[in-house]
Image (cartoon, rainbow, N blue to C red; front, side, top):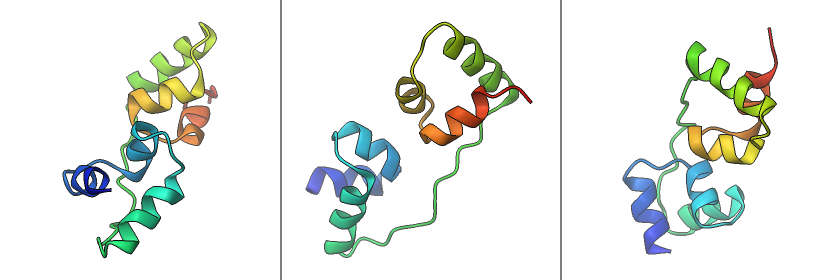
Length: 86
């Protein structure tokens, strides 16, 4: 638990921590709440246009949403939106 709290306070998002510790995001939030750690708003990381082009290419080459979400530190839905041509 201390590692989760320390990592969160060092700037890791709940998404990153859930991936790192192989648990659900709600589990991370519960640990933080039980230990009275203030949960800030979403730590939004916007993808650049170059990121989106690369994500589309890599999805076509077979990269999974989960792999890309972990690599870019965003949610799976963000990857799915980025992989959809506009």
